[in-house]
Image 1 (tube, helix red, strand yellow):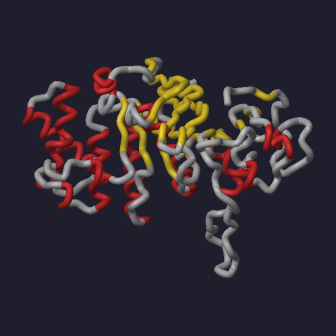
Image 2 (cartoon, helix red, strand yellow):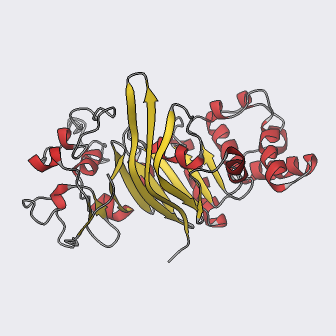
Image 3 (cartoon, one colour):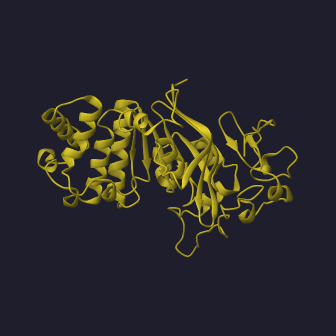
Length: 345
């Protein structure tokens, strides 16, 4: 079994607002092994980005607050570390690629200098040595004329090139964990493929673990080893990419798949959208968060939070349809372990 790089256990994050407390993350647990990619999937507002921001220590306090749980990087607890202690890890042992590179880079500083900064801080390089290493990193991310590009400002780059700069910056100190928060959202399809292939290439070379935040199931199929599906601040299904794609056990996962267009789908066939809206996170449902939108909901779904059921060896589902006493349905698996494993709500 590979080394566990990141282990998140029952993480809970709240935000205090004028309207009340938003329960953004409600007991999220997952782990990522060395050299593996975990894709965290879900619609906007499901808690994907807040979870990784809490892990990185980027939750603004106030209004945000981690109210429970644990996150360990190579066995070291991250929750509760001071800013100074986190700064020793951020950009060094763990790094993050943000969704919009234009707003993540300093517009008044040349990109080579920005990449070199982490090398000087974490690896003790001198100014010229760090700049030379920054140029080498730009070359590695396939940016042409890297020496000239290192002397330019962010506004002189296209969106795809800026994302490559962000990747170069995140890899400067060879982190063991890379978090990519929707790194291809603003890019066209051709550039998306180039950026994803670059991430795979570097992962193969460095053996780092990747947490990929996305709502694009096509990206998941191409990049992920394991998948965690989030809804209403909780993980509702997790497993290998094959388990989740070919043997989905939660109605929300099935709904996500059916809402995506297929290559062979006729133009006159409408997409099957998920009806309804996500729940109010000021007052999350007592039972399953997906209950109000689920076509298979039962009375117990509205009143009792489902435990995490083991569907197969590494495949889990937070759904009452997996209970041994549930009526026969398409989501029950013949391979299911009939013992439910309870987790904190």
